Length: 294
Image 1 (cartoon, rainbow, N blue to C red):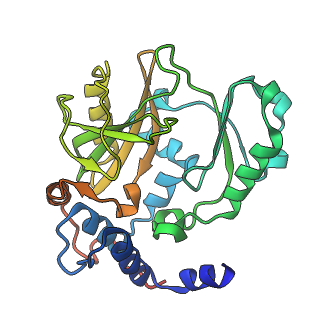
Image 2: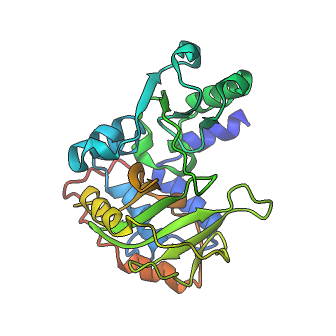
């Protein structure tokens, strides 16, 4: 396993991306003239290297970036930021909170009762995440130099939903074209993903995950969330902007440049081309630094 990990790490970004694209999507990656959504995400990994993206994916630093653009009233309160789990003083924390790593996806511990928190399990999960450089799994370069830390936030709770629904806005060159929600995360049948247009009509395609049979009411703040997402995505070829709506209030979630690493198939396949047509790629060398071989 160590030899395999070493081999993966020494591959150039371009070579690794080509291999993974073929493995996951069963087709050759076209970087010379990318047309589809997934192809263009790979191109952006290699050639759109805006340094601000690193701040934007850091779950702590992103709050400062977002606050400067749309205001701090949309920011989930931070209760602490730590470099090690053992530095956390749990006596100072409320009964409910969320712990997560600033530099990856999935390193999250939700605490709804501090007295029942499994400390050993929480420590193991977060410390494993701290040791992991998320960049290597999909060559999402903005994560490469994010400082690994643990951020603790206020736990958001909604009286209407046990699990918070986050609304994920797909922004193309500063314009929202569609959004999606993830449902049934705890279901034995697995995650469902439903896409919606700007008028909250369901869109009839899937990306890796099947659609649900659930019809959600349009969020009260949907139109406002669209406006906020567009403010945060100006002059960016593609970025996904996530928000929560809790008791009528909007909270910022996160920014994601490469959903699914750009390795998730569309059904029908034509939607890969449709979403791809919405991305206008910058010219290589203009406001970008090609460091794909590093």
